[in-house]
Image (tube, rainbow, N blue to C red; front, side, top):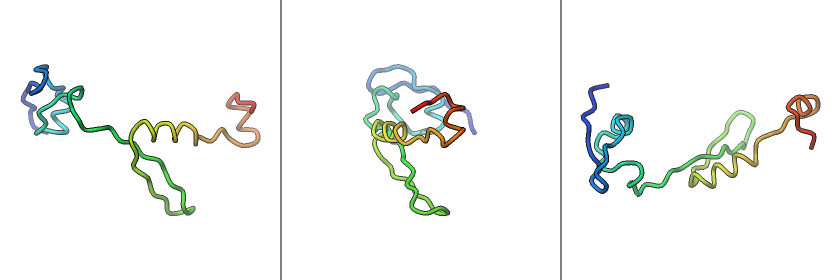
Length: 84
Protein backbone atom coordinates (compact mmCIF):
# COMPACT_ATOMS: atom_id res chain seq x y z
CA UNK A 1 0.00 0.00 0.00
CA UNK A 2 1.07 3.52 -0.65
CA UNK A 3 1.65 6.23 1.90
CA UNK A 4 -1.56 7.64 3.40
CA UNK A 5 -1.70 11.44 3.44
CA UNK A 6 -3.19 12.78 6.71
CA UNK A 7 -6.57 14.40 6.21
CA UNK A 8 -9.07 16.19 8.45
CA UNK A 9 -12.79 15.47 8.68
CA UNK A 10 -14.85 17.97 6.69
CA UNK A 11 -17.47 18.17 9.47
CA UNK A 12 -15.63 18.20 12.82
CA UNK A 13 -12.05 18.91 11.75
CA UNK A 14 -10.32 16.04 13.61
CA UNK A 15 -7.69 13.95 11.84
CA UNK A 16 -9.19 10.93 10.06
CA UNK A 17 -7.66 7.66 11.27
CA UNK A 18 -4.92 6.50 8.85
CA UNK A 19 -6.38 2.96 8.85
CA UNK A 20 -9.72 4.34 7.68
CA UNK A 21 -7.96 6.29 4.94
CA UNK A 22 -6.00 3.21 3.83
CA UNK A 23 -9.28 1.32 3.33
CA UNK A 24 -11.37 4.27 2.09
CA UNK A 25 -8.84 6.65 0.52
CA UNK A 26 -11.50 9.07 -0.79
CA UNK A 27 -13.44 9.44 2.47
CA UNK A 28 -13.94 12.96 3.74
CA UNK A 29 -15.45 12.19 7.16
CA UNK A 30 -14.25 10.48 10.34
CA UNK A 31 -16.13 7.45 11.68
CA UNK A 32 -18.03 9.58 14.21
CA UNK A 33 -19.38 11.96 11.56
CA UNK A 34 -20.05 9.34 8.89
CA UNK A 35 -23.69 8.72 8.02
CA UNK A 36 -23.05 5.20 6.77
CA UNK A 37 -24.61 2.69 9.14
CA UNK A 38 -22.56 -0.37 10.14
CA UNK A 39 -23.80 -3.73 8.92
CA UNK A 40 -23.35 -7.32 10.04
CA UNK A 41 -24.31 -10.73 8.77
CA UNK A 42 -26.09 -13.84 9.98
CA UNK A 43 -25.32 -17.27 8.50
CA UNK A 44 -28.27 -19.03 6.87
CA UNK A 45 -27.75 -22.79 6.94
CA UNK A 46 -29.91 -23.98 4.08
CA UNK A 47 -27.95 -27.12 3.25
CA UNK A 48 -25.09 -29.08 4.75
CA UNK A 49 -22.71 -28.08 1.93
CA UNK A 50 -24.03 -24.74 0.74
CA UNK A 51 -24.75 -21.86 3.08
CA UNK A 52 -25.44 -18.17 2.56
CA UNK A 53 -25.40 -15.05 4.70
CA UNK A 54 -28.05 -12.41 5.36
CA UNK A 55 -26.86 -8.80 5.60
CA UNK A 56 -28.58 -6.89 8.43
CA UNK A 57 -28.03 -3.73 10.49
CA UNK A 58 -25.11 -4.34 12.86
CA UNK A 59 -27.15 -4.36 16.10
CA UNK A 60 -29.69 -6.87 14.74
CA UNK A 61 -26.97 -9.18 13.38
CA UNK A 62 -25.06 -9.07 16.68
CA UNK A 63 -28.21 -9.92 18.63
CA UNK A 64 -29.17 -12.80 16.33
CA UNK A 65 -25.64 -14.22 16.33
CA UNK A 66 -25.53 -14.04 20.13
CA UNK A 67 -28.78 -15.99 20.46
CA UNK A 68 -27.86 -18.58 17.84
CA UNK A 69 -24.55 -19.72 19.34
CA UNK A 70 -24.65 -23.41 20.15
CA UNK A 71 -23.88 -24.31 23.72
CA UNK A 72 -22.74 -27.81 22.81
CA UNK A 73 -24.18 -31.27 23.09
CA UNK A 74 -23.74 -34.03 25.64
CA UNK A 75 -20.35 -33.97 27.34
CA UNK A 76 -19.20 -30.80 25.57
CA UNK A 77 -22.04 -28.88 27.21
CA UNK A 78 -20.73 -29.69 30.70
CA UNK A 79 -17.15 -28.97 29.68
CA UNK A 80 -18.11 -25.43 28.78
CA UNK A 81 -19.58 -24.94 32.26
CA UNK A 82 -23.14 -24.53 31.04
CA UNK A 83 -25.76 -26.56 32.86
CA UNK A 84 -28.95 -25.46 31.10
